[in-house]
Image (cartoon, rainbow, N blue to C red; front, side, top):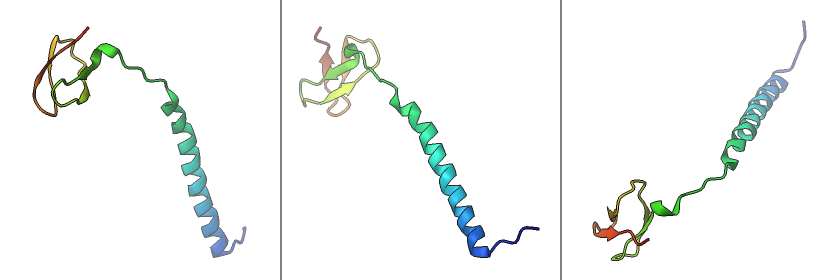
Length: 75
C-alpha cells in the first residue's frame, strides 16, 4: 500500500484539474483560428443613421435594425 500525505494528495488533485483545464483550452483553441470571411453583398449601410449592419437575405431593400428606415442596396 502506498502511503501519501493528505496535503500532497490535495496538491496532486488540484494539479490534475489544472492540467485538464489547460489541455482542454489548448485543444479547443485551435478551432478559433479559422478564417472567417463575409461576402460584401451582405453588409448594409443605413443612409439615415449611418449604422452598418449585416443582412444575409439577398434583398434589394432592407430595413435598418437601429432606426427602422428602408435602405436600397447600392451596387
